[in-house]
Length: 139
Length: 374
Image (cartoon, rainbow over the protein chains, first blue to last red):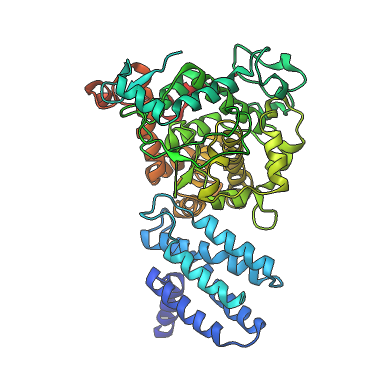
């Protein structure tokens, strides 16, 4: 009886895994960025980045499970961070070249364009983080 | 020829005072007017610019005031923007600084020899631009020709174009700041998206126009050919390439409407096809999403809204559209500026009681009352 209860509790906790908050996402990103900067080979860097992408995908599924009708403001910020990083994720799946790096940077800047910001010429924090990540692959 | 000086405080056209006239003339509006008059006059058979007309000049529709597209699929047929709405929009104050682009030599004949631009300020009292018949004819001609020409690339929603330009510049060809340049407030990143074959996805638009034999593209084709060979700079020193009446205006419209098509067809449509293919067919929804991506908030905001509202094939598009509108600063800004157009059309001052009390009709907000089939 006790073991059944524990199994049910385990399953319940799996079904309601808590997504990373925006702050957690940024912290996680910083940890991964440091790890990537320490890797010597591009393949190791790519593997580390892939883990981060998987974490983001999982957290977004968790957000949807937690709130199936409408996302929260915190989730909006996490989504924006993911969108900004997406060009880096996509680029890392192929052979990295100067042209691919420039393309990824253009995409980050284009998709970040928001003229409703106080200073439209400044990039968002999310885009800045994505560019910093891009630099680790495009020196 | 007389100017229509629109007084935003009084909400009506008034006679120009001596100082207002001097202000207009002193800031070279007169020269600009001459350029525009000459350019508009090419529509007359005896006009000085007749040589720039396409071979089949008879295709020009005097009643319409522009060349309707002749070489597009039926499904791409786009509405025209009504002149009365363009005139009303031009009477709005865009609240921005502008440039006058003068020319060396005979006015308006050589856009390549522009001299240093300068601010014109608020040229006619509270109005940012002097509006006369030739100017409104010309803007109407240029904007509708651009819509017709770019319909060859993809179906252009004229309502979205009207709302965008009304919001960005009030159809003023010369406003410029760090935030954007010209009638559609183009940014350098948008220009790179349209021109750079390695970085962006929009070059197909200019390539299509450069090969087009459609009469509607006659004012745009040469600019497209030229730009595909050598990209025009977007630096402050080269603003007239994007602002001058003539090539600057043609370039601004071509890139802007082209950017709208690129955002919709190369970014949003593929994205929505993955999430909710049924919704791609919903024109009204696509127009709102494209307005956000193409407008001030950008593509990431449009994408964020699709995620926020858990968009799937089961999503009710009418409900989704309401939520999207409620969550877009840009679409709200469009509302207040479309209301200004509605009030000006009714002859009400924007600050007056009648306008303040007026609840804008959904058809006015969407721009439906400002477009008509050809």
